[in-house]
Image (cartoon, rainbow, N blue to C red):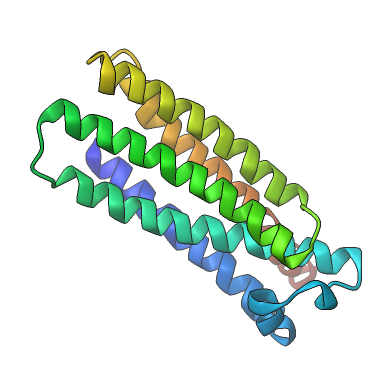
Length: 183
């Protein structure tokens, strides 16, 4: 079963990189403004949408890579079992908070409005935070495995949901391109 979760994790990572690369390649004339742009680069609603989608996709990718790597590191630590559980679940909760704050701050710094993509990413992050805090309390504090399966599959499903949210634009564009080529 661990192979399933590991394979899913790598699949999600691959698609996240694909989404960010797609946005950078598709909008190569705006590549630097996507990374370093500000309010002066946002002239139309479409510019706001593009920058917001890029910020969401890039933040999702960076935080997923960082939290996955950190989670693997935590698991290898030599600590007492309950302390390790508490540290693990609380750290994952903190990563979710940091993701939400970073995405929000990047939008404020850029001065761009929140696209539906960015808003849905924040909603899913809130669900992830609730799941992580519940697992922290139930498994980390109370030493109960009641939510263990819900947590494992819930995290995978929420990560897949986040991926589908950020991939909607690129996949939709590629689908339309393929249909035009085939027609």
